[in-house]
Amino acid sequence: MPCHAPSPPAPLPQGERGVQTGPLTYDVKRDANGVPTASFPLLRKVIGDPNPDWTGSLVNEFSYKKLALRIQLDAVQGVDVFNADFRTRQGVGNGKEAEKEQMGIYPRGYISSFYASVEQWRIDDGSFVKLREIALAYKFGNWKTARDITLMLSGRNLISWDNYKGYDPEVNSGGQSTILRGIDFGSVPIPRTYSVSLSAKF
Image (cartoon, rainbow, N blue to C red; front, side, top):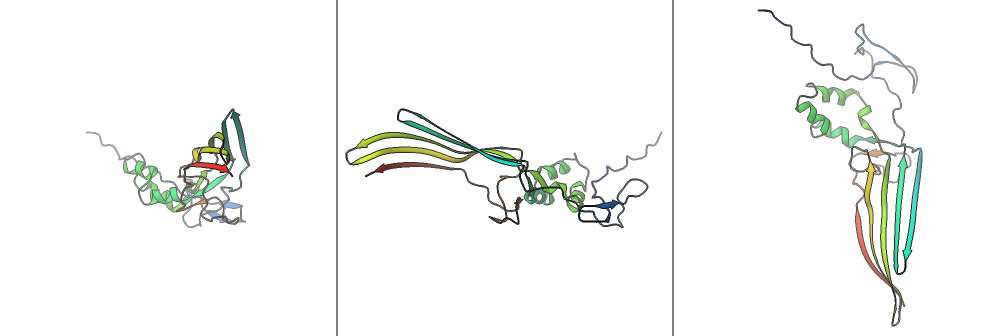
């Protein structure tokens, strides 16, 4: 009966290794099989930019008789986010990529290898377009001593159109810091809020 040799294990992702010749330059070192040489340290280079290519807002206001509608769209494009939350979920077996290893789509040890040496996993596209605000107002007019009586229904942060793997690409773990930008680690997403208001002048 013929005997077949077992299939070689699927390769695991590895970080590039070699000699760092400068902050952004390096000399790659691999063995005869094209595999990074373990005796050299992992190489580093800039792979993300927290500064957006452009930002913009579009505000439209419409009125018809006693009705008024205000819509605001905000956009941030060409920005990278250091999505540490996504990477951490994989490392503890609680993410979509970790699930693929558990299901056998990735070979055993894939997540551990990626987690330990590959930094691209941390960088995520933070571009978005948000329906920042929509407000509908009805102006009742005057009544006795009250003037400009207005009832308003509004909502903020209602929809985010993005490809971000986390909860909200707009968050920043550094708060309002201009030094630590585009970092998502344990941050609370910006809430979706609704409000009803009644105003008048006396």
